[in-house]
Structure formats: C-alpha cells, structure tokens
Length: 340
Image (tube, rainbow, N blue to C red; front, side, top):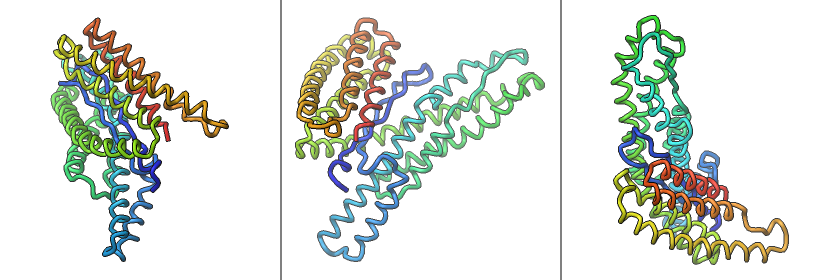
C-alpha cells in the first residue's frame, strides 16, 4: 500500500436538523486506508494478512501483517462511512421519519389522501451489512454499535414494507384506517430506536476516524504534500464550525459566535494558504496531467460558502441558516472525496 493510497481520506456528510431529531447530527471524518471501493479491495487485504503468517516471527512479517490489518480496518471504516452517508442522505432515515410524522396518521381518516414511503433505507441497510461482513480486527465497540443499528433498521424495514403495501393499495380506505392507527405508535418507536442507534453508531465511528485522521495528516505533512494537507485541515476546521452548534439553544447563544468567529478566522487563514498552494501547483505543472486535482479548488469554494452561511446564521439565529451551513459542508465533503 503506497503512501498516497494510505493517506486518502473519506469524509461523511451530515443530515440537516430535522424537527424529529433531539439534537444535531455530528459529522464523521474518515481515513480510508485503501481504495475507493471497499468490496473490491477487501480480498487483497485479506490475502496480505495470510501471506504474512508463515514468517510471522520476523520483524518484517509482523510489520507487513500489521499494515495489512490496518488496511482491512480502513476498508471497513470506509464502507461504514458510505453506508452512513446513504442513511442520512436523500430519502434516508431522517427524511423518511420526518415524512411519516408529517402524515400525522392519528389525525387522518379513511377519506384522507395519505402519502407513505420506505425511502432508501433498505439500500443503506444493505451497505451496512456489506461493511459489517468485511474482515477486520478493528474496534469491537464499532462492530457492536453497527450490529445494534442493523438490527434496529431490520425491524423498521419489515414494518415499513408491510405498511407501504397497506397505504399504496389504499387498504386503509377499506378498514377505516384501523391498521394504520393501531401500528402508528409501534412504527414511531421503531423510527426512534433506529435514530438513536444511528446517532450512537456515528459517535463511535467519529472517535475512530478522528484518531486515524490525525495519523494521516501527520503522514501527509511529513511527506511534503502540503496542498493535500491544507485541504484536509481546512475541511476539519469546517467540521469544527459545524459541531459548534449542537442544538437550538447554541444558535441563540452569543458566546458560541465568539468561538465561531475565531474558528472562521482560522479557517479563512487556512483557506488562503490552500489557495496559494493550489495556484503554485498549477503554475508548476508542465502539462495537463500534472495539474492539481480540481477537487481542491471546489472543496475550498464550498468552505467559503460555509463561512458565508455561518455569518447568515450569526445574524438570523435561525435553523434554516444552519441547514445551509450543513449543505455547504456536504458539498465540500463530496468534493474532498473526489480527490485521489
């Protein structure tokens, strides 16, 4: 595994603050120790572990085995991050739950026009199961939290599929919405359990990602790749700005904006350095193939917009402006994940 591949970082997007959530979802930043598709490279990492076993007594073999194990863990974390992004993204768990709450089944009748959706929860669940099946000697706390989340989503999906058929076939018009109202509380409880499991999983994932991210940044700095280093530092500072606000009280708290202003000043300084490094790399490149990746520039542009959204929040103290911050951060994340 070469240093460029080893230090490629993956980041997780955030969900906006939906009314159903007790608190804001925090972001997750991940070092991918291997390539972009975890499923395609898991076998190679597993083989490397096996090859190192015969000479396990030698220092070189032990180092190779440790590196292969680290690669496996990186693959699994990468898989989990992609699954988490899917779960909180478009038609994911938060959006599907919010849609169900808005339907307000308890207040409806057989004459109502009821909209019901499964969202894309099953897609995210399948991604979690694939990541869980990957070999790894990674943190057991992460595996346990993944098992809890998978179990919660499995239960929720069974209910969603059954009720999706019920509502789409308009069977509720035949039974006067009796089944829908009977199962309303149970479905809400399953949504709550899945949301709690998702939040707990992300907390554990973030702890591991933070540790690995710091190690990756140290390697990038030591390698002299200061453009990639500054890009990742800038994204990390953007994450800090997002995480400054954990609830609506924080958005009304003037002291939070004192901290925020300091973070913004630091972020803008890092972005200025990143832009200078990007310009220098472009000037130095002798041909098109040697040009620095555009993802550095587009990521920085999104972070500038994040700063603008923060200043909007500072003025308005409204959740809509915080949601705009998250959208801009997510754009930065998507651009950063395109950087090889």
